[in-house]
Amino acid sequence: MVLGGAMLLQGISFGRDEKNEALWTTHGFSWGVGSSAYQTEGAWDKDGKGPSIWDAFTHKKGKVFMNETADSSCEGYYKVKDDIQLLKELKVNHYLISISWPRIMPTGIKKEQVNEKGIKFYNDTINSLLENKIIPIVTLYHWDLPQVLQEKYGGWQNISMISYFNDYANLCFEKFGDRVKYWITFNNPWAVAEEGYETGEHAPGLKLSGIGAYKAAHHIIKTHAKVWHSYNKTWRSKQQGMVGISLTSAWGEPVDLTSQKDIEAAERYVQFYLGWFANPIYSGDYPEVMKNYVGKKSVQQGLGTSRLPTFSVQEKSYIKGTSDFLGLSHFTTRYIIQKNYSALRGPSYHNDRDLVELVDPKWPNPGSKWLYSVPWGFRRLLNFIKTQYGNPLIYVTENGVSEKLQCIQLCDEWRIEYLKGYINEMLKAINDGVNVKGYTVWSLLDKFEWNKGYSERFGLYHVDFKKGNKPRYPKASVHYYKMIISANGFPNPREVKSWHQKAIETCSITNQLLAAEEQRNIAANILRLIHDPLTTHMEMVTEIVVPTVFTLCILISAILLMFLLRKHN
Image (cartoon, rainbow, N blue to C red; front, side):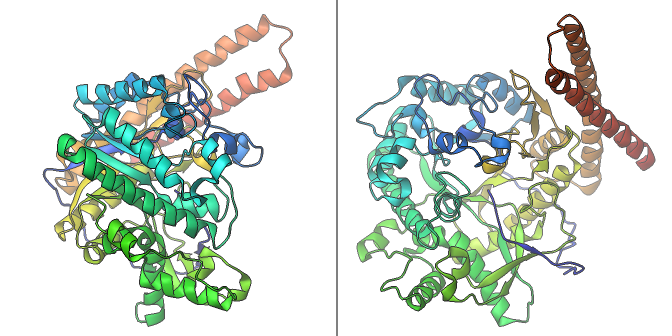
């Protein structure tokens, strides 16, 4: 998930943080972690899988940081059992996964080809999860559209996607629905539309400013409704499952709580973000403020009709109510102020909103430049959903924080603080009466982060992508989240503090073991190089110098943490 365009307010602290230290515990709750097919599976062209738009996008130079790809990624396709052991170690209740459309339908078209090896892979994965008493929550679309559908039809710009996706969804219900009871049609359609068809930062990389995103979103919403009705008509009575959608939204807070313009701008921010998709599903149509603002700008730009498409009366009725639960992905918050953008600047989703996003320089920002830790915004967003959409059943499908990888960082204290703050605010929202029944940390593993490549890491487990077997190492947050799951929340501040200390101690030991392993590898490489006089200078740099620097980083981190722990004690 990516947010762009936020400005930093230098030297200003808003002091909006809430200091309520109450820690709530909830019962009958599902704790989990998540991943997605394209980001973790690798095996991009193995066993009959067809190419996706992300395969095509990443294979073009200049589209991704360092021209990295997910061709092998975490090798998750070959390490299902290993990763299930990690899930068992965490003691999670559920695991959020996605199915790769081109892995089971190479061209995206059912009548052309169904890949039985792909179906077997997901059958085996689902069965292994259930054998280990882990509930699979399955996403049908996490951004990897079959490339053939993009080339032939223009992807989500074309209404024919509704039929092709419905065929794909029904095949999944047929093959896996006897065991899968929680289905998500789309993950973060905002990013699919805005970053795929507005800015072009994501696959398929189209820059159809002010038009493409609205058109893609329109088709996605209608596709979601079609799939929900298909399940409701054909599969629900025999499979007894649920179908929802996972929407991503930051919270928008007015800079000036006494300014009506700022208050309206902050709500407009959330409506253009969450309401764009949630409002049609829960109310039957786009938010009025979206229709008004996009319509007004369109008229000023000399267009005969609004750039925001319209739903017919029949479509509104068909779409309304098509979600058994709302999946919510949330990472951060923005302060919002009103700002008018001239329509003469040309069509643009961002200009249509007439607002500016701001951040407080005191907010923690350990990794992705868009991701500031602002826990109190989570509670406000959850209460907004409760009020706006009639308190729907909510499963939090993504919540987490990244780090920028310079050294191997197993002692991720910032992630522990982030999880503590955000989970606590979610539990407060449950105490407010918000109907949240599950929470998912994003993510289980470090993985391919779209146009950022491997430069940003969201995982509870560190993955060494330089090694062929892609080994996983637990970060401190593994121990901490495991304790939250075990306690079903936060029992008392003193015990929670002890979790933190134990987690850091555990990762310090792991750091030392990892450093020792790296030293052994370096020694082995030196011996090999001594016996291989033809080895080039570059090989020496990549195989000795780089690992040595990483080892030094690990050792320094371990020493500093031991010093801090002793000082703390």
